[in-house]
Image (cartoon, rainbow, N blue to C red; front, top):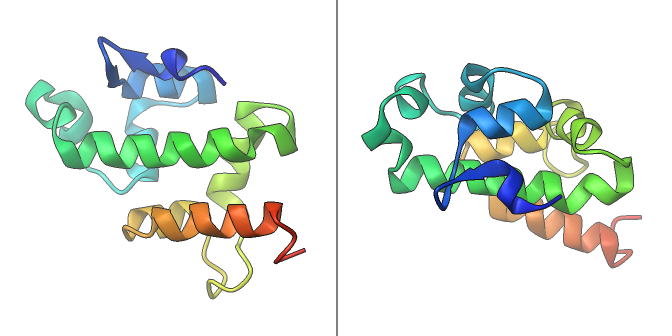
Length: 116
């Protein structure tokens, strides 16, 4: 998916992400481990933490989207599919815990045939 679909004025926009995933901005915030303030107040939405968490989720969903055929299905995987080797945690839970890099490494390993 084109990253421009998720952004507004060079920043990740929760409302645009929510539109692509057919959900609400509030759910997007919860999905990445942020409070409502992070997406409602402009200064918080522009913060490094908010933008980093949104970017991590978008990167993960974009990376797996070709497997599922749509961003919506990739988002469902992100939220609900337990990842082997992570004690049954989903990509969403790992991102909330600040472990997005581990999810991306896991996806790369699967793509390389390590976790087939």
